[in-house]
Image (cartoon, rainbow, N blue to C red; front, side, top):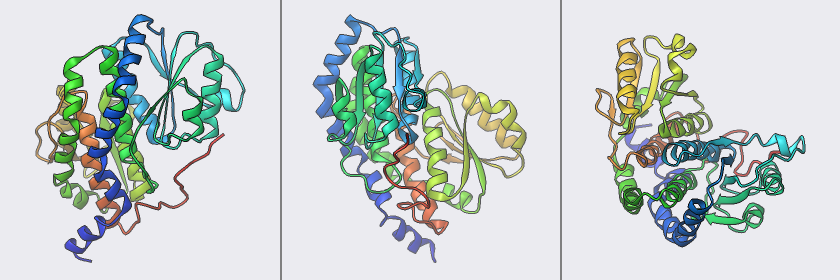
Length: 347
C-alpha cells in the first residue's frame, strides 16, 4: 500500500474524526461549565480543602496526573490518586472530611469508580465529577457534575474526551487560583489545538512503524501526556511503550537505552524544559532514536506554543493524529483494538 493510500485510510477512522473534534469539544466544555466552575473556585477559596483525592481509570487517570501537578504547583494542596479497590473490594471508607474528591470518567459507569465516590461521600468529601456521559450513574452521584461535552465517542481509544478532561482540570485550577492569564489562554486553546492538528508528525510514523518497544518521557504536567501516549501506543498500535518521568528514567530504565532505541520526549516551556531538553540531547548522544515534541531539536515534531500549563494538551492533540496514522501503517484498526471495549466495568 502506498504512502498516499495509507494517509487516506488513516483519515477515515473514527479515532481520526473524533480527535479532530477536540477544538469544538473544548469550546463547548468551557462555555457550559464556566459559571459552575467559577462558583466552585470561589467556594474552594472560602473553605480550602486540606487535600484533593482523584479517582479515575485509564486515560482519565492520566488526566488525574495532570490535575495533581496543576493543583500542587498552582495552589499547594496535596493531591493523590485513590486506590479504587480500597472501597470497591475491601469496602473501606477513607476519612476525607473537607477534602475535594475529583472523579474523572468518559462513561461514568465503572462499578469501582462509583463505589469509590460513594465511599468518599460517606467519608465527608466534597465530590465533583468531570464526566462525558451526563446521564451516567457517576453524574447522578456527585455533588457537582462538570460535563466534558465531548459528544459521542465510539472509537475505543479515548481522544477528545481526554483532551476535554485536561482542559476541564485547567479551567478548575484557573478559577480556584484565580489565574487570569491561564483563563485567557484557555479561551484561545481551541484555536491552538486546531493548529496542532494540522501539523505534520509523519517522521514519527516512519521511524516507529517497525518498532517493538519505546519509552515516552515527560515531566511535570507533561508526564500526564507521556502516560497517555504510552497507553495509546499499546492499545492502538500494538507497540509496547512505557512512560517515565524525565527524572525517573535516569535510574534503572536508562539501562535499556542504546543504539536505535526509540524515545518520544514531550517538553513544555516551564521550569522542567531545560532538564528535559538536556536529557533528550544525552539520549541522542547515546544513539537513541529521539523524537522531540516541544523545544528545538534535530528530530523536532512541530507543535504550537501556548501557556506552559496548556502546552501538554496541545502536544497530545498532535500525537493523536500521529498514533492513528501509525496504527494504520502497522496494519491495525485503531478503532477496535483486540481484547478491549469502550466501557470497561472493573469492580
